[in-house]
Image (tube, rainbow over all chains, first blue to last red; front, side, top):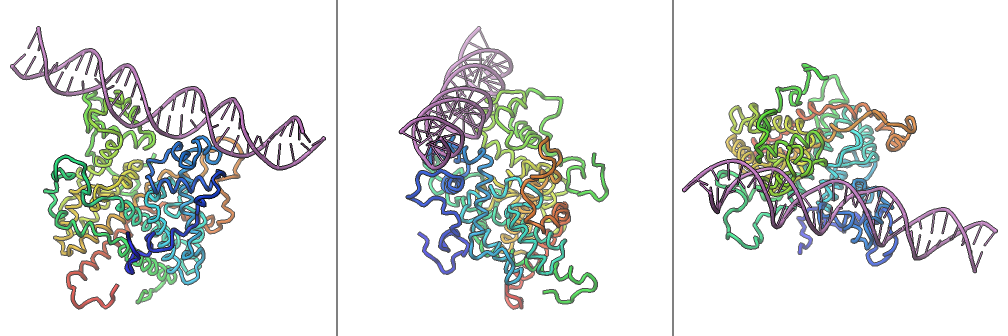
Length: 265
Length: 265
DNA sequence: GCCCGGTCGCTTACGTTGTAAACGGATCAC
DNA sequence: GTGATCCGTTTACAACGTAAGCGACCGGGC
């Protein structure tokens, strides 16, 4: 299908050696028997990736694991908590990503950049799961999507503080960063499932009645090809760089509250 | 409860005369009998706002309207499409907002600012509905959340083109703008339902076992008050202004494509 | 050896969900 | 009057999440 294009998106699943492989989930032919929470969550992720979130029911997930639905309840309190576990598992893949570090070693910008791409890799690897990451209610105001893990929040804030951000600036940075990631990635994955060409309409009228009448939206029609173009990778990069620049300005400013530096960054 | 604070958030429901009132939905005491698509969608919105999305079932919505569940199917093909209709209705409130204009009259920055605040007002007025706006799959790549209406896309693009943006820049602006809105507003509404203080735990251990152990996250604990602070309005404003500034730079640059930028991206 | 408490998946059962299909009573045109 | 049309109800069914109890295994103490 898609052979490794040198211009390929480095965060797309095809562009790497697989999805960070933090959750092998099930050694494919082996270990058939042992049910267990990790195996269930892994199977749930696979199932959602393959069939969509709506298709996931306890019964179907059970039979996907070769087991009756009720067996799952030994390891998971219920469906809601299973979804919580799925979200947690997916985010936990970050820990297995060799390109993302918990500590800041090459500067905070490097840290944020690696983290952002790590999250983006996860979002692209699990496009059907990611909206779940985005919409599950957070346990507390500071555990917000898409990071969703106190450990990452802690790591983020420490990195900022260690790099000269004030506490206020670090918190503001955290919020700006989460919003940016969430917005971009949610839109990017939601765009992935969209068909542009009608593809195959089984029968019926040959070509008319294509969704709604586009006659009243000439600009949309004229720019259709531009609008349909997928520039996600470049736009992500640009917005991320802009955000980092903005944060650097905030950092500089907050370090020398009196008088200013005429040349920020 | 909350009396009109002069520093109040101008987009919050309390800060205005009510939610743009584009959908009276049901003249409260009158017109009991006539069922009708608009009335159903209005009731669904009220119901979700009051009881949350999960609580909405066809049967419950029916009895909320004083009718059996199956009666709804005369006006709505099914539950999924009902939710689509809800999203559409909520976004349609923008048309009734006197502060938001379809055409650009005082410059594109004014246009974008009014539009952004209009959408934010909607999000805050319907915090339980907004995640739905964000996650329903778009019909086409160019109809993306949270605008979700070809008419707004058309209006947006026209505004940009009329203001000197090239086609590419207009499309890029549209994408950056949607991402920004979606990310900020989704996080803002998701934060609204979060309890900070334990509030009332019915019984049990007096104070321990508060969710997870916070002992390993000293920075989070130390910054808890900052993290819990709700600065959404100011942050929204700041990020919006930053975005507008960025777009202006793009616009300037794209007008004089040859010569010019000493700083290639 | 045997027994025995524990673990684990299965079976059965119940209330709720979305929705197809048929039904009946108004209301209307003629 | 008389049929057609509208519109809410009734009935029915498969699928859902999950509570409760069952039985087949298991490793350790006597």
